[in-house]
Length: 339
Ligand code: QUE
Image (cartoon, rainbow, N blue to C red; front, side, top):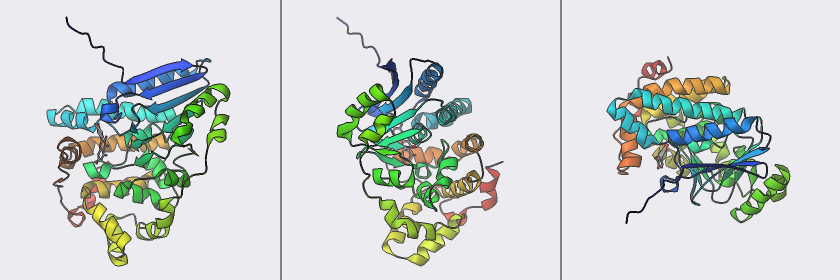
């Protein structure tokens, strides 16, 4: 006798007690976003926009390890290697459109971040009205490690963080702890995992005021400790100048930053610094349009296929970047990518 396997949906969307509940349900891939998930999330949010049965929306990740580890860069790399530019374009355009829908959503949108939230996962949470982190939340924008750049509206929200934190996070891909996330405003409420079920019941019972009733004092921020050094070394908008400041500083912290930056795509680093410089003066829709244009240039650059190979596909963590050093980057070629 043959067994029939019914594939589980990768996004669960249900309405109950006035709450529209979204669950990212691809736990084996750490809930990494593919185009079908982006479409399902968009469809649910559009359907709930005017639906009086939905007072607020929650979004969470299934599986207990990740909220969402990012976009499906493995599939995008496959598209690139097959020469299918249209498929990649459809992915990024749909993803950024969803980011904008979340940013402009007329009802409370509560992200419950109880695990890894990187790249595309940040885009599903940061633009919402309420961002809850537990002690298991780990945030980052790690795209310079795969020859890409911080997208999903990062060129809008990162330059608006205190001091030079945004550029530091964008270039180094540094992990942001729950305490950091609250400290810099990326998260709005700290709720321990053990209180999440009670919070969800409270959201059904009384709406977003339940957030205040369940919030605990945030843990200490590690970024706050490093803030003076970050602001000092990451003041320039130019990557060669930032590297020179870190070299001159020369302490253990500066050496660790230089080590991180030495592993990133030099092209990604220079593109990212220029991206945040421009994004500081632009609206979110303008930033998303700038990022969409930049994806076309960046995924065609050899560093993207090589970076995803080294970090995600083969996991050899030995990308061979072209050019291999920041010193060898032609600044005019970086600027041309923004045309
Ligand atoms: C840097 C990144 C990403 C990454 C690893 C990096 C990224 C991303 C993924 C990822 C994770 C799990 C998956 C998947 C992709 O890994 O953006 O398909 O199942 O999405 O070092 O930027």
